[in-house]
Amino acid sequence: MHIYEPILPFRHLHVSSGLLLRILLLLALLFAVPFLASCRHHDQAVAATSGAALTLSSEPLKGGTVPREFTCDGEDKSPPLTWTAPPAGTKSLALTVTDPDAPGGTFTHWVLFNLPANTIGLPEGVPKQGQLAHGGRQGNNDFAKVGYGGPCPPVGQTHRYIFTLYALDSVIDIPAGAPRDHVEPALQSHVLSKGELTARYGR
Image 1 (tube, rainbow, N blue to C red):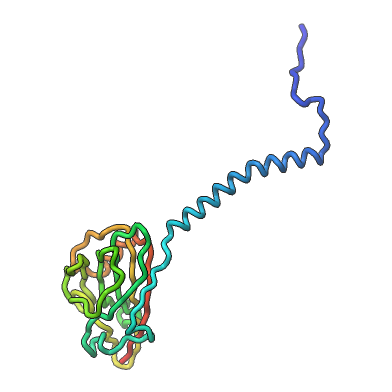
Image 2 (image 1 turned 180 degrees about the vertical axis):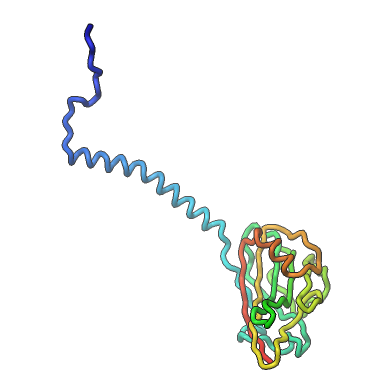
């Protein structure tokens, strides 16, 4: 019986070590290029879905301080606000105003949500009612009142007041009059973009 040795391709081909190394490098490059292209495409897709930050501004607050008329020492009305257009896919907007320097911890001055996505600002003196004419809703502030409650720090202190605007991919199913600690957890998983404006007030 004869046992035949299998015929192996290139069995008798002698390849130098330098040529073999170049062949292996070429093969590695051929496999790497599609992989890197795929990674680059993925990075671009992630960047495209990350909305640019909203720019929130207010003419009366542009100096970095809250004028007296928008505080508890004045007319206690909300200041006018404007912002840049929200990203594509925005279904509603929400706004909070907080004082992180309050003695008892962060104090809520305003909670507003379910503003229509095409809203690009708020007028001075938003009515202090739960349901607004354009469809937005206002929650309770920490003065236990609906709507805006202006800065009112202890005498001798200056506090920061942070206006935070959120662009959301959904309308939030929460009733008017809800406090911030009910509203914020409901919107966190729906945030597409946000912007902040900080101003100070002292007494």
